[in-house]
Length: 360
Image 1: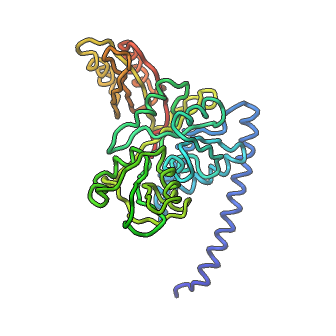
Image 2: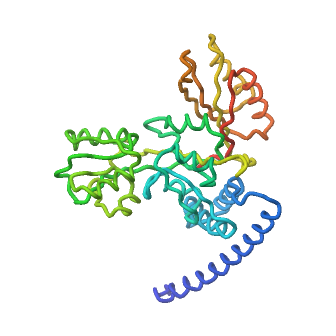
Image 3: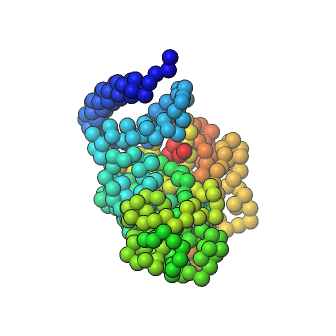
């Protein structure tokens, strides 16, 4: 005989009680770990360890929970336990409601201290000066390409990359009234305006497009003017009490942005191998025929896969370029170490931007 709703609720309540007891038991163990780490001077946050835990749980999962739900639940559990040791201060492009904030929460969990910043430069400054422990910045979008300011700052900064997160980005048109009528200005970050240009050209062809520091800032401004609309995510709409006039107006339905998590090496050294890792580099080569080809040869010879190759002007006035390269693997692996050593010998400039577990 099937169970009644009342019987099922009683069983769920009992399981919730067991879960709460187990979570508190885990939290107590995390406190003990924190005491050992404080005595040793070890970092509280270990991204490779957390990646290994989540990957192991996903592999052991027998359902009906989906693998991505397992990751979300355990990231929040680890975030709450980590906050008992020391809450992480995380800087990102603000104000509240930005995709950068969403990426920070998705990577670290909700139990963080938020440090919203007005631009990418301030994010890097906060993490360098100690106002924040970590910074989260967008580095690449699958439709609009690299975020050039982030790449320039990574080149100049003492910060290194210790993690990454890939976010499915859905842009919504937000305003104080639930109508497309009477919109005079659409406000958003330049990247968002570019990612939605097809929809805007079709539905609001004569409306001014105004670039602002972030999508959430555009939503905040739109909340104060009924003739303005912002392009932003659901978090911004909720934060500023706006109607969603049009859903998912980005031109690419699978629009994704990749974010890097950065910090000082003394805050967190390069993570150890997790089994699924990436090394990010920036290099330059002598300006001679075949030089770019030559730096790719060591990767092929040692069987190392390159997943990203971008060029940026060196601003030297000599038509020279920096090349941003991502390769799969970890420097503790002999074939990766050999490839990087051979690559470095060919470069006029060579900098490791970070070694970190590959994001979801």
